[in-house]
Structures are given as C-alpha cells and as structure tokens.
Length: 193
Image (cartoon, rainbow, N blue to C red; front, side, top):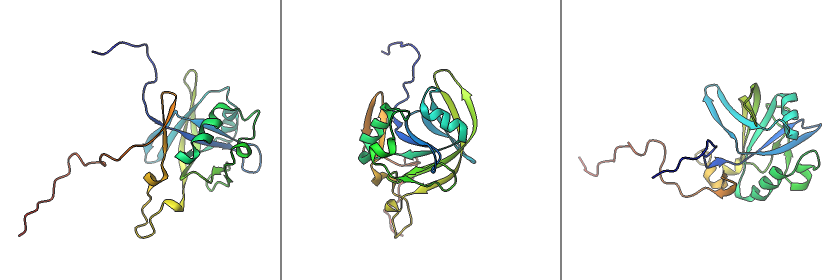
C-alpha cells in the first residue's frame, strides 16, 4: 500500500553537476546544481534551475551563458563544498583547487577536471516559484581526452565514475544492467548453416 504525501520533488537520483558562470577574465563563480536535465535533442537544449538569491544567478542572467560540468567521485568533496558556500564570500576556484579553463563556445570558464563540460547559451528564463529555470541551447561540448578510447574513438563516460544526488546524499553510479533497446533485442541464433 502507498501513502499519500504532500506534493514534492521526489524524482531521484539526479546528476550532481557544477555550473560555471561569469567571465573567464573577470568575475566567475561555481554553483552546485541538481535541478538540471535535457529538454530537447535537436537543437540540443538543457536547463538548470537556480534560486534568484544565489550569487551565480546574477552572473548567469547578465551574461546569458553558463557551462554544465559533470562531476566525478574524485570531485565529490568539491561538489558538495561549492554547494554550501557562497561565491559572495569565497573564491571557489581557489579554495577547491579546481582548474579554471577557458570556454570555447561561451565566455564563461569550464572545469578542467570535469569529464564533460556542456557550454550553454540561455534562450529563456522561466520564473517558477523558489527557482527560475534557465532554458538553454547547447553550443559546444568539451570532452576530456582521457576518456576517449584511442582504438575506437568512443567516449567512455562510465570510466569517469560520475556521481549523482538523491534526497540530500551523493552516490556513485552502480553496475550497468542493460543498454538502450536491450529488452527487445533479438538473441543471435547459435545454429550454423
């Protein structure tokens, strides 16, 4: 039997990402975000939701750009620290030791340690209550060559040991249990002709 609960955001797990914003040469900041996701594949679009009182909110609204940096097990402590400290009071780049790299398709920096950095340009902002949603088009993706198989050219994101966020806790991802379409894939016949 299921209990009735008041409406809430119980869609878990979510990716735990660090969003970089601002200017590479000027003021920039990092903010941990779990309210993020894909909204369209062509054109490639995604979103982040940020509280208007956050320091990064103004930087994103001013530049209309941000970069979503996927996080790894090795980045977990920095991911949490960035989420509980304000850029008004801390230089998060300096205090976490994360590498500030110049963006390619946007003016804001990306994180060198991130296996994937998704550069985004804001198309619209929706005021939704506690958070505003920045709907953005992906203008470029930076992929860390350490995760590219030199023999196939395939990107092995699983080897990056990505982390997720679930109801106030961080987790590593578990074992693969299948792949897209595996439930309907026909088994190969062992018969010889």
